[in-house]
Image 1 (cartoon, rainbow, N blue to C red):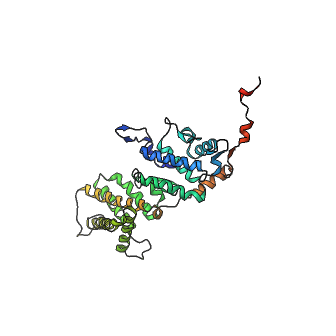
Image 2: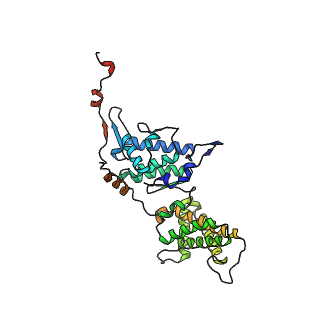
Image 3: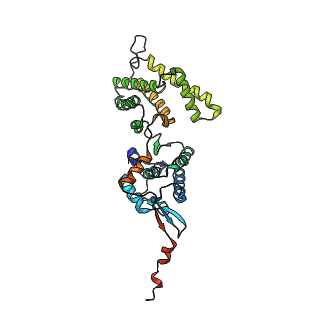
Length: 336
C-alpha cells in the first residue's frame, strides 16, 4: 500500500518548529490538530461502529472495544513494512513518544479509512476533514488519501490526475522547473504552464465558450473558499487574476505566440514569474475540486484484495468473555 509516508518522504526528515522549539523529525502537526485527531480516532475505535470487526477486540470483561494487536501488527507489516504496534498501544490508543511520528499516524488514519465498513467510510472522512478545516486547512482527504496542500504542491498528485493531457503537461512542467535558471528553460516552463492554464479553464467537451466556462469556474472556487457575502467580489478577483495570466501568456513572446506583435522580454526571471503564477493557479483549481480532477481511489478494492489474499474473515473478531475471566485462577488462591 502506498500510504502517506511513502507519498511524502520529505516530511519524514522535516522538523516541526513551534514556539521556538525544534520538534522531532517526522512531526509537522500543531499540538491542537494532533490532539484532536488522536481523540477522534480513539472514539472511532471505541465506538465499534466504523472499523471492520477483525481489527477490534470486544472486551466484555471491561465492557469496551479496542484494537486487536496481532491483526494491526500483521496488517501494517504487510502493507507498510513496519508495525503500527511499535508506536501505538492498542488497548488505549496511547502513543510511545520515543517512536511516535505524525507521518506514521497519518498512515494509521489512511489504513483505518481503507478498513472501515463501507457504509461508514464517508462519515469517517467527514469527521477528519472537519478537524482539518478547523485547524488550518492544510490537509484534505481524497478517497482515503490525506493530501498535504502546502508541502508537496501538485507533484504528489500527478499520478492521480484524470485527464491524460493535463497529467502529461503537469509532469513536463514540474520537470522543466528544474531548468528555470536558464533563459530557454524558463521559457519552456512558462509555455507549458500556460498550456495547463488553458486546459483547466476550457470546457473539456467544447460546448461552453472559454470565457463563460472560466468565469463559472472562478465563481465555484470563490464559493468554496469564502463566505456568501464575499463570493461575488472574490470571484471577480480570481477571474481577473486568471485573465491577466492568460494575457501574459498571449502577449509575451515565446510563450503561446511568437508573432511580431508580442513583447520580447530579455530577463529570464520574468518567465519564472509567469510559470510560478500559472502553477499556483492550477494548484488552486485542482486542490479546490479534487473530486473533479483526480482519479477515484478504490479503498474497498484494496480491502477486498487484502482480505482474500490472507484468507481473513472481516466479520470475525476477538471476544473476551466474562466466562473466560472466571476460568482464570490467581496463584494467590492456590492451596499450596
